[in-house]
Length: 169
Image (cartoon, rainbow, N blue to C red; front, side, top):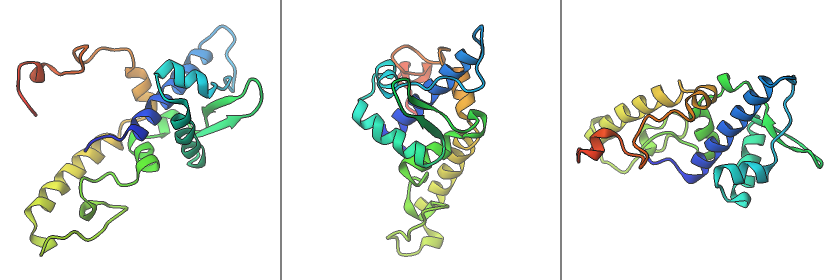
């Protein structure tokens, strides 16, 4: 599975919101409703295209994950508890199916072109891939991603030690 830019940017913006709200909540004078973050601020801090981010944030608002405040000091804030929003939920909201093939999707099933779906070895492997992805993506929350932010778990070039050694997953 390759994460779309839409989902990648949406998750990055949401993690930024979660971290911003956590920083405000732990400040000297915590607010029950932290100040919203302007779209331009989210775009600049995360190096994201503002127009595309606006479309993404609109989808996240329709999905009930973020809320907006209008006006000079308006912007976006979390509408849901970040600990209750899984990465899988965000990806499904922004991109639809979380499955490598339509015939293995739980929510967006579509019959595949193979002659016998019941005995298709590729489908069988893709079911395992789907299940492994769902186990991780539906368990990991925005709160957990925000807590991970800033901790180096990989080489600065974005490669794990195995990849640097020439081993391919």
